[in-house]
Image (cartoon, rainbow, N blue to C red; front, top):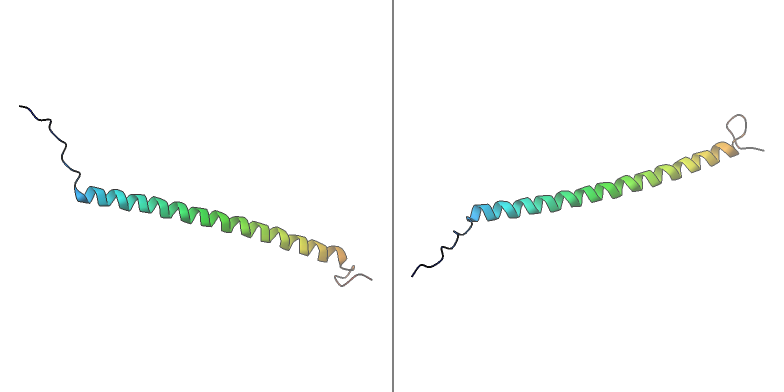
Length: 68
């Protein structure tokens, strides 16, 4: 009677390497998402600062002081 030949189990180091790779990919994606959120927050803050500066410039008098 011929029994089917089962594949050899994957070596433990291959499994550990795959797990480490998956964790690295997950961590990298997490860092990229955090960096994207930080960049967007910085952009929003920069725009708000620009509006504040514009309002100050529009209300400043001819010599840079407050208008009359």
